Image (cartoon, rainbow, N blue to C red):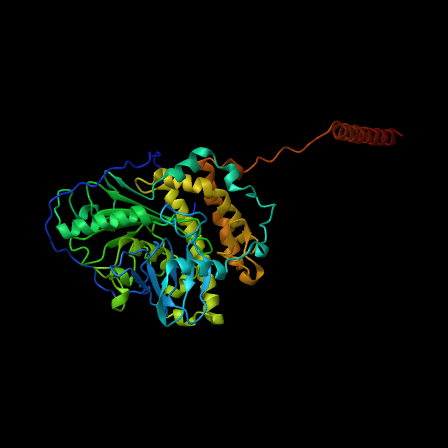
Length: 482
């Protein structure tokens, strides 16, 4: 057992969450302690001007295009995006396949790295441009994973209908009765009354989450404590976080929306990102836990919970988290910087595997069956990726159905990374087997085959040896008596 992972017996599976409408109560305003910027810590200020699907009164979403990467995901029809068009944008498919119930007007979310000189673009025409310029790895550039790998079977073929159906029916947003294990449970009471402004904003956030969550983020709100939320984000393909589950406990403070929400990451004691501390702190200028200019901070009239969650997914759990560290971003693209980034991402994937084990052994309340079903469905894909990494594939290079093209994977994984993956893979596979993945069970070695001819030859050799010994002793006796 790895010393970084605590041995915890898995709790019994729970049924899916019940749906109830939020109750209206009379409320009043009470100030609470706010987060303060800790400039001594090493958390990186994530650029968070991106506001995906926020309901801005002018129908325009502003994007600071010089400083960061944004995800354009589930933006409603008619909303305009302010971004640069003076230079070509680079696009990359940045989420799992399929569409959410809120993506009726766009087929896939994209990752865009724009330049400068912003202007307003209609999202419908922008989507058409994305389709033409998408530089996602084509089928001709995909190389199949070694067919001799122990997990060569397709996940879809091995997944029983019960787990697949559960995940299909699991609502992206729902309400639950209580959160007895919530990080912020002791920071308030069910009988607490809030202002009408607070209640109106929270209900508006609930509505946005219910309608517009992307397919890789799931949220549960508490009926008896409307100030509490729990969210899980699925790590994106092409990053060292792929296929992992990352949980966050959230609280709306009494002064919300004037003050940003409070967010705690379920770390399991592991530091998997410069912005996600092993104590659970989430370092982000949007939360007020790091410095940033006015547009990078929480804007009471514009910022939403959806913006916050998608910012964490796209800007923190990204492809090269090393450059989130303060002072390291200028080295991006340099030989030294990219080399350090590669080593950091390899370590992040090992910690992500440990996070998987931690989540399977101690799933957060109301997500127990979701965690088990998610890893049941993805177990073979995760095992395939680990086998590819053991054979030298770079971390994050595994896409659905194969390895990225040679131009995308010019460097192989380090020797230490291959060794670490092989060592910890045994623990991960052991947890998958406990979930019922029989394809990953170690097959007992058959006993050596002994045929009749072999047994006969062995017996003849023994008899021949015995006869030779007896004849030798008889000769010795005759020599003595003579």
